[in-house]
Length: 93
Image (tube, rainbow, N blue to C red; front, top):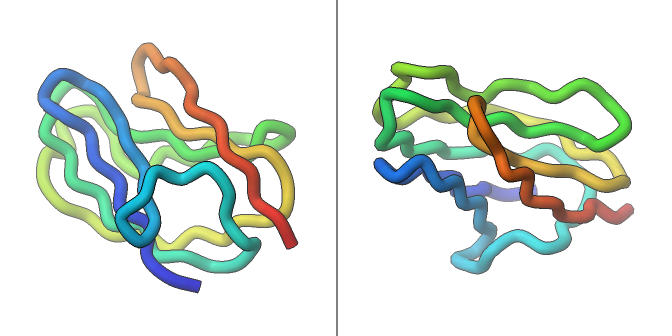
């Protein structure tokens, strides 16, 4: 489907964007998530509200990484690993 860009700032704030815009809604499908983590204290969690979340990076994983994720229809969220807050977005068929 495309590439999602995720970032964790040194201030431990997470962002997720698609085609340069903050994610609010996406089409269901498989995406590549490119993550840039600038904090040695937190990682990034991505999850569907009704399912278990997946850690895309963990604490001390500073630097760039890439992950393939399949997003199904429903409510999703992302957050830093230690203390949120969760940011929600929808995935539609």
